[in-house]
Amino acid sequence: MIIFSSVSKYFADEPTAIVDLNLEINEGDLVVITGASGAGKTTLMKLLIKEYSPTSGEITFENRPLSEFKKSEIPSLRRQIGVVFQDYKLIEDMNVWENIALPLYICNKKEEEIESRVTDLLNLIGLADKAMYFPRQLSGGEAQRVSIARALSTAPKIIFADEPTGNLDSAASIKITKLLKKINELGTTMLFATHDQLVLDELEKERIVHLEKKAKNPPKNDEADEEREKVKEKQEKLAKEIGEKNNETEENKEEKKSKLGLHKLKIKISSKKEKEEKKKDEST
Image (tube, rainbow, N blue to C red):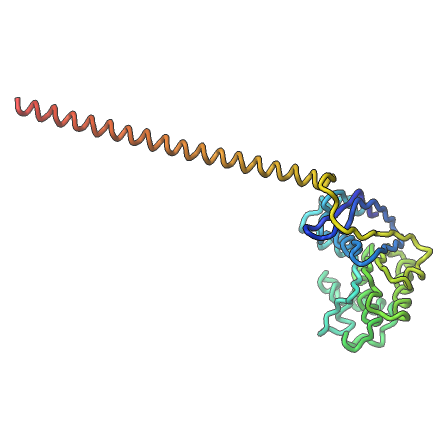
């Protein structure tokens, strides 16, 4: 379903986020992605939704390389990958119902479908009685459950939960973890990024992928730097060719000017000569 093939992502003047990652995720999997802060968990999510592109390597989604996706196809891709954020990202002036329904309205779903879908999701997260509440009236755990329901609203094939328990207490963290496990059991592929030990203990029987934080970018002789050097050489070569072409153009202009000046001089001499001969004939 998803394949990361030798994927690396570098940032200028910052630690390397992802280095040579090989990872295969099958439909229905629950994969726990762990590592210290800055190890690349969020970068992995942004690569998957094409907010970032890999520096090297390829990501394949349902047998199609993400590098082949056109810009116009990215919204469709993102509707298939629901994201649960650490800070919820709920819209403050919309109530719970409206926050969950928003993606469906954006997709131009019919009112009946929206009504049915939001009702089912509210029941799933156990907040049917708080449908008209606003985010400020919710606890952290409740707000995160609404965020999960919103991520599920378009029935995505994959949920990427990015540190979903980062702002919650222990009891709320366990509830959110169990809710996400339940969603996975219902058939949604789940990528659960966390470094919360309580959550890791709860998910210890699941497949766990460790990302290691890199202190600095790799040395200059790695493949990515070699590729950058090749690009740089091509750019310099092209700039040189353009410069030479411009010089040739300037030389041609000067040559034309010189020829034109010589031509004008010849005309002037010829005209003067004709005038002298005419004057001589008249005097004779």
